[in-house]
Length: 379
Ligand code: CMC
Image (cartoon, rainbow, N blue to C red; front, top):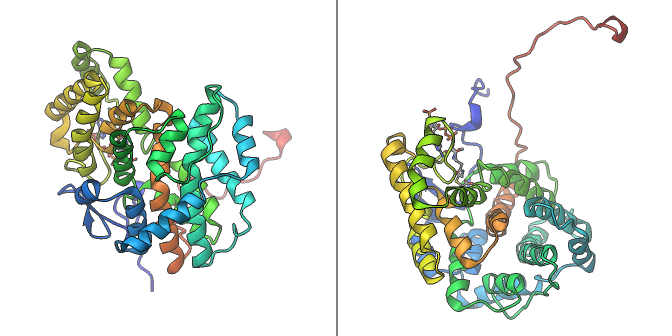
């Protein structure tokens, strides 16, 4: 016999899946991928190694890591039709609309799209992860009227992305900064977009559909779209003097301050802690100290005003300063989140399929019953 259903708005108290990808202790501010603390991974790992960890539930040896890196590099390039779609995309399109559409289109060019065997889904995970940076970087070039840049299979994912975006190889420090951001965003329990991906794959649909669903879900400002909103806020505030009145006025109006608060963390988001140190370094190196200082002032005011409610900076807050300092346009920020999170989404899809049960909750009907149908002419 199944237990009586319980209404749980926002599913905040519902455990809807088992996972071995990541663990969060929201009260203590802990995040682990497969048992490894996020801080140790950010300090010691690379994005490619973190992907291996999420997909295999263990760290690779040197040969295994080299094999995955080679598999990814072999898939950086796009079908010619997708290059053409980039050229045909309106330059004014928001990059997340573009990304959702073009990632979806990849499914039409993959003969394995509907093969849900573990082997085919691994290969599709590699393709999705490898091709997405090529799409994002080249859409940014297209909209700026710059010639498209083919991926370079001699480079790791972070270096290759920036090389395509800027048409020049980044410094080792800047590529490393991006690599760390990719590690920090790779997975995060059953967040809204991961849940959406798992719902889609649980119908035995396909990996491209699941990742397209996830991108659409990530886009919202309560989820991945918050990093772009943080940058808009920093631009709007403009000066240090304006920080305090701006934040206090918004709090008085009960507005949300973007980049703060989290459904699970009621302590400092460990990713934000790491990104704060990082943002300071990269902002200083690139002459963006002003942004960093404005961010810490916002944090101080928020601490005095709302820390008692368990509201602290989340991953999106200091990633805005970091991405801006790396030279990435603000409307591309959420695409950066997606580029990384594809590793987690695909890990969860493979996990879901390994022990699948259709995810299908219930709704509490709150409307009327027993109404008599009235013909149109009589309404
Ligand atoms: N600014 C001001 N007050 C806030 C904020 C915020 N950012 N976040 C929550 N609160 C307040 C909220 O008003 C409520 O106060 P009260 O109890 O007095 O009515 C209380 O905190 C609890 O809020 P909630 O809406 O019940 O919390 P939630 O778990 O549903 O929301 C959240 C979580 C992330 C949607 C929310 O904190 C928020 O809107 N934050 C801003 C958007 C943001 O930064 N999102 C990125 C999340 S982290 C990256 C990711 O996962 O994508």
